[in-house]
Image 1 (tube, helix red, strand yellow):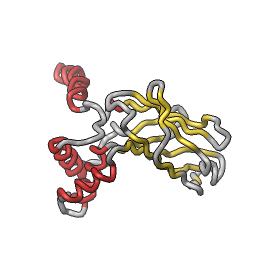
Image 2 (cartoon, rainbow, N blue to C red; image 1 turned 60 degrees about the horizontal axis):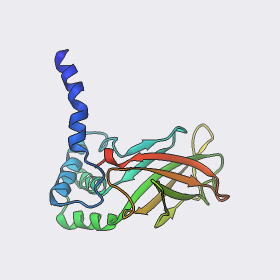
Image 3 (spheres, helix red, strand yellow; image 1 turned 45 degrees about the vertical axis):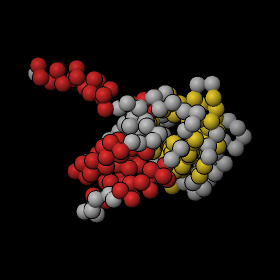
Length: 189
């Protein structure tokens, strides 16, 4: 029992040491750590929840940091019983360079509800517009009759802090806010 309490007390300290913020660029050691995390994740259901954010409406967002991108590539390679080559690792990092990618699942009342959605990222006093936005035009219908659209948004990283909090706000075609997510980049790798 005492050991469990000690582990519970140390958990926040360990998390603080391992999660130094969402690095927008990886050095060689961080890239190797990402590869190892991806390879280890093959025996689990996923890479972990640190990149997943839910809002009050139950919608989900996944933050694709360079660490997560490399770890996913290494995980996929491990499932194929191969190792991620340095060339493939570098390609994954180049694809992610200078941008923060967000995969968002939004709920709506009809199949085309997300077609004209427009995202923006609020970082302090700054409003950052996306460099890329792809909204699903025909959302998937769920068993309960609601629809879920999977959208992809990419934002430039130069105006963002790797340890800061940002808010993703999604607006409809009339400029009304329809969804938002608070993202703590300091809690991710």
